[in-house]
Image 1 (tube, rainbow, N blue to C red):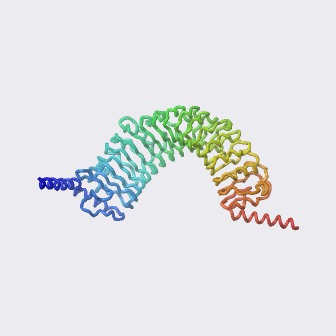
Image 2 (spheres, rainbow, N blue to C red; image 1 turned 30 degrees about the horizontal axis):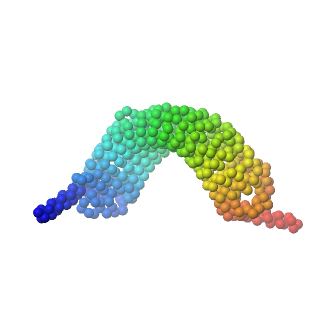
Image 3 (cartoon, rainbow, N blue to C red; image 1 turned 135 degrees about the vertical axis):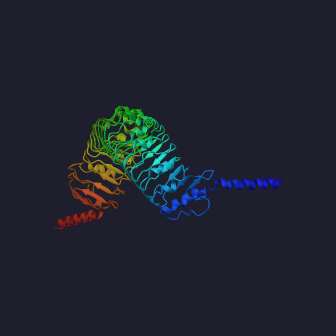
Length: 492
């Protein structure tokens, strides 16, 4: 009986081993694939290709995964070798130096493919007319040199597609919004068309992608209005369309996107007022709307976006007294950029309740008043730009700001006009600005000589003072010369 049991175990081991042994035809195809491409040795030497690095087989010995990212592969993709791997579900050849175009047969032969990642290579040419695999879920062709229009037929068979990324190529024509229309995938979660040469209007269709979470088409040549149906894609978490020529007002319907966390429409031509109910988007973390033509006041409801991390509204035509806004609710805020607008009033004291603030940029507005000592509660503040406003009391500001331990950039040019440069007597027992690297004081018509305390700032790399650009060495030389001249004049 014991002998029978041992024979059974031996037979099971032999059967198990044979199950996982790869097919000879597929082994030959893989060796041909490796031979065609120039790369460091892949160490594919054993008889069973299912044990080769980057290869996975199913229980019948068919190769299902070919994963060779960052292996130094060079040359054209040998489709004649890959087309024999008819059971392939995952193909990842990303971050290599592959070149050439994708032949139509390349897609037709891989009709079981689920994951295709050819990103970060040197592939070029136009895409075939369609993806032949109805199982395809992820396509990443980003950071290559593909060109031409993406044919609408490309997605006809892709009924299970969840992610499509063709960013950083040279595609032209219209963004294929038809990908979301009927008979396309109802499961799409990511569409990234950024950094291409797409032009024209964004066609309707995106609203049909009911599961869409990320839509990016930044850095293209898009124009026209945002299609109204985009506000029907209520699962959207990120909309990134900067560096285009889109225009029109931002619709009040944007409040339908209740899951939105990242909104970037910067460097476009959007106008009109901000939607008054923008504060209903309580999940917003990053709002980037700078370099547009927005006007009117900041909607008070914006303060209800309590998860905001960055708020960038610079280079617009916004106005109103910002001192009436209560920033204390924005406890997660790290960056605030309201530069080059028409805001009035004083810097809100409530802003100093945002304890995580690292950068404040309020340059070129109509703000007034003095810097308050409460700013010292911002322990992480490293960048402060207050230039070209009507602030007063430079000496008081310097006495306060020198205690901001992490401050490395301080830009005050065009403010404190006509005041005196804080003297050494003003800054007695000076030991502040320990990490200051950049100081801007140009266009303020400050009076008095450059004080000695400036020369003690050992980390200061750049000073813009009265139109004179100085590094640390130049600054020290200037101070020494001024001291010498003063001594000579006194002795005379």
